[in-house]
Amino acid sequence: MCGIAGAYQQQDGKELVTAMVDRMSHRGPDAGAVVEVVEPDTAVVLGHRRLAIIDLSRAADQPFAKGGLTLTYNGELYNHRELRRELEGRGVRFATTSDTEVVLEAWRVWGPQALQRFRGMYAFGIHDERTGSLTLARDPLGIKPLYVMSRGEGILFASELKAIVTAVGPELEIDPAAMVASVLYYWVPQELDAFRGVHRHRAGGWTEYRRDGSVTDGCFWDTAAEAAQAAQGPRADIGEVVAASVEAHLVADAPVASFLSGGLDSSIVTALAHRSDPSIEAYTIAFRPEDQRLESMPDDARYARRLADHLGIRLHEIEIRPDVVDLLPRMVDILDEPIGDPAAINTLLMCDAARDAGVKVLLSGMGADELFGGYRKHLAMLVAGRYQQVPRVLRSGVGAAVRALPVAVGGRGLRTVRWAQRFLTFAELPEQEAFRRSYTLYDPDELTGLLDPSLAGDVGTVLDRHRWVYDDNDLDDVVSRMCLADTRMFMPGLNLTYTDRASMAASTEVRVPFVDPIVFRAAFSLPGTEKIRGRQQKAALKDAARAWLPDEIIDRPKASFGAPLRAWVTNDLRELVDDVLLRGELVGSGFLRAEPLQRLVDDQRAGRRDESKQVWQLLCLELWYRNAREAGVGSS
Image 1: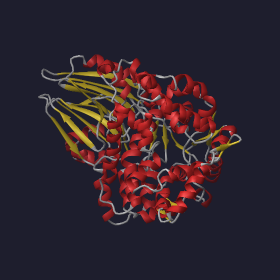
Image 2: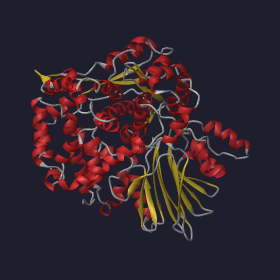
Image 3: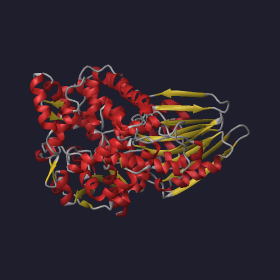
Image 4: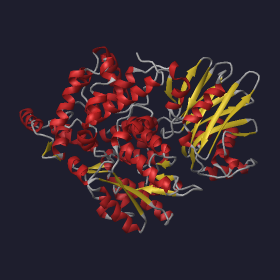
């Protein structure tokens, strides 16, 4: 896992790429280089920071040049050994045992068609001296990041947005639509850009830039089409597919460990990894007891310990006692985009601990909830459909009573009340609107009322984009539609983004065996009734897990990979909220309206409503906005 950067047809390319590579030193502490390809009609500079995982020798350092091709590559190719054998059968000779060289030679032999053969996570740029072209490509499901900026007659690209900001910050401008989306979602969807003119390269696609200024785009993976095709095909053996994926993701020449929250997904990955490698170790987190009480959080570490004892593996337990006042600004810088999910802190601290122990690679259960219907919102949407059949007069009485309840009493959070109040925000809406409201922070009127009135058009744009993504499919059941929407929006926009940034900030690599094209197709070969069976979520995955895990782990209540957010917002961050958010630049610029913001904070502190996620997200956005402005980025 690495960091890549490059400049194409830029007179100051070497200076810019050097600045970008230096800004991403955390992504690759093992090696770094900038290579300028000198040609009469083409200006090409490629940069790289290396975290050595496969072939630890210096021969595999990048940018990697061979036979007229130069490659800068971030990722892992889990089937590189099989592809190597096939290429050797065609007469290709290899100088290293790296997957990097396999990518380069596969591209030489098959061109863009090689992308359909790759099983892994990747983003790369490859320059062909023969044609003078530069091609960028990104993995099918958007695991690895790739940002591209059009500039003059060419482009800049990098693994992280802040690398481009470091190089050309004063040339950029914040896109208010992305900020509006961040307020609504607490992250920025892939279709929107935090800075105008800097876009995420399409997942499952490639782009060729030529020296005459022409550009060709190609697509080798269409998520919606793949889901529809899988739904029409034969049903896959989920156990077989998931086990094979975990085994494939263990390929490494560096130590591999596992995240183990004690939940189903991480337990499956850990158990299957242990079956292939009995020496594997695991990492888990625990929280301060007082934070757990206020948040009303389950004791996940208890289940992690039980599974570790069951498997006989060593468990590293990390108690989360962060100085969140100091850690929050660091996390905002690390996350790169305006993301308001505190789970990123858990990932960072676990990766820090693993790296201190000499571990470079960790396995995660991320992606199973999106693919197999594991989020509470998925079940809540089905319950909402039944709730709508209740006579309206009864629904009105229940709603009024629930909304009047406090969310905390005597310093203890009332989790059931929080869930019930959340449910009522979407229970009577049509499907697409209900799904959006089930996981976003505001309804349209609340969002519009919080923001400058001039942003109403941007609010409409953001809502329209959600509608388009949700409706763009040929699936015939609500569970499958929700899973597809999450796989296209929630997973790449939030979960994969914060996992990449937090793990790479600790110079570690996180692999996600569920986020795999073969597992994706297997998941969508199942009807929604096999994902949520009655009130049992991830039913098909749980059926398969009976062969690997104790029933106690499989049948335990669902728990999110969260943080004691209410405790942090109510206690630790109180002064920061007052000084930085309520009197901050977002209010001063008019982006946020002062009075509704103050009411939101007051409701949180009085325990009338649980607005902790909203307060956290807005505080993160304020800090992100300040960072951007300090880097010289303009605002509209």
